[in-house]
Image 1: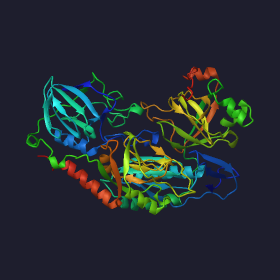
Image 2: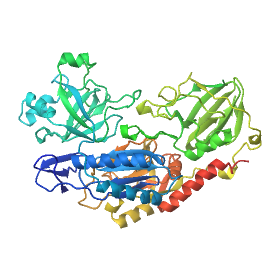
Image 3: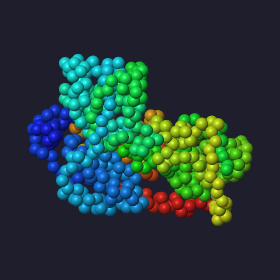
Image 4: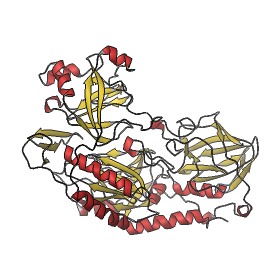
Length: 274
Length: 317
C-alpha cells in the first residue's frame, strides 16, 4: 500500500509503504505537494475511547499539527479525560462516560478541531533534545553488520545516524520506549529475524527507518549500534521521560570515557535468542 | 492500626484498585481490577468507597492472618473460604480478630476472587493508583505481587451503624459463571476495513477461551476473522483501549484486558463493554463466548446505570 504525502522539510517529499511482514514504515523519497491540515476524522475505539485521525501517513508537519491539537484537547477537556495516547497520526482519547456521552464529546470536539484547522502550522512546537551516544562495535554488536549491508564504513554509519533530527512519533510497548523517525534511507535495516533474549538498557537501535533507545533491559529485535547512558524512563522523576511525542532528538557521539562518566555500563552485553 | 499479614501467596495475588490514569503517554498501562463488579461489591459490603484498593486473587490459593480487629468481604470466583478452617460465606461481611486465619481455596467456578477490608489499605500510591502491574514493577507494596510475610496496613474506620444489618449480597446478584457467555461489544477501530458479512458471521460464531489468556489479554480460538484478501494487516500503531478486539493476521481474536500494551498495530473491530470485560476476565480456559454487538448509546447508558446500581447497594440484604 503506497501513500504519497507532502514535503518533509526538504525539496523531495516522502513516500511510505507498509511491509506485510513488519510493523514499521519503509520510507522512500518522491515528489509531492505540501501537506495541509484537514478536518480530523473521529473514529470510535470503544465504549469510552475515541480516535482523532490527523493524516494518512506520518510526516514532520502532520506530527507538529498532531501535537498542536493534542495540547488544545488536553487543556479544554481536562475534566473529562482519563488518558490521551498520541501516536504517529492519531490521538486516542479515553474519557469519563459517567460525565458525558460519545455524542456530547464529539459535538464539543468539533469547534475545537475547526479552530485548530484554521491555525497555521508551528513546526517549532516540540522540544529539541540531544542524546549522547557511545557508538562502538563493542557496545553496538550490529554496527559492523549494518555498515557492511549498506556498503558503508562504521564511521559513515555513525555520521549518518547523528546527522539528522529525529521526531518522536510514538511512545509505547514498554514504558519510555520512543519510536524515532526517520533514519537516512542508507541506514534502514530490517529487524533481526529472531529477537535477542536480552538487550541492555540504553541500547541504541535501528529497525527499518526508525531508531530508538531501549529504556530498560528487555528482549529486542532492533539492530544495535551504540548505547546512550542517559536514563530515559524513571518512574521516580517528573517528568518520567525527557521527551514526548512531537519532540525531536539528535544523537551526539561521545567517547568511551565520557560514556562511563555519564553513568553508562560499559560491560553491558546482549544475550542471543535461545 | 490493624494489619493483614500474608501467609501464603503467588504471582496472581495482587493489590488492585480501579487503575492508573494519564500515564499511557509514557507507555505505562492502566491496570486495575479485572472484574469491577466483584471488586466494587466487596468494597460496598465492607463499607468502603467503591474505588478502594482490594486484593485480587486469581485462581485462589491465598491465606492471610488478621493482626487486629478487621471486617472483610470476599467476592468473585466460587471457592472454599474458611476462617480458622471453618467454612464461611462469600459475598458477606465477615469479622476477623487477631490471630484469625482467612484461607481462600482454589477457584472452582470463575477465576478471580476479591478481598476487601473495611477502611481499605494504606499502601503508597504509584501515579495515583495502588494497582499492581508486574511487568512495570509498579503498585502493590513493592511493585510486586503480594509476598508471604508481607503486612498490609489497614486504615482505621468507624463502625457504621446503618450498615450493620446489611451484611450480604442477595444470591440472585451473585455471579453464576456459566460455561458459555455472551460478550457485548461496540463497533470501532478498523471495522470499516472488514467485510460486513464476515463481521456478521463472526458474531454468530462461538469462540473458546484458550489457556494463553491473562491480565494483558485473552486469546480466543474459533473460525477466525481476517481482512479481505489484498488488505495489509499492518497499520500504523495507535492507542489500544480496554476491551479492544484485535485481529492479528491469523484471524484469531485477542481481547485486551487491564494490563494491555498502550499501543499496537493490529487491526481492531471495536471493543468489549466494561461489563463484558468483567465477565470475560472471570472465564476460564475452555469457556465458549459469543460476541453480541450493541450500539454505543446502549453501551454507555448501561454502563452508567450499572455503576449507579453498584454504588446504591440495592443488592444488599
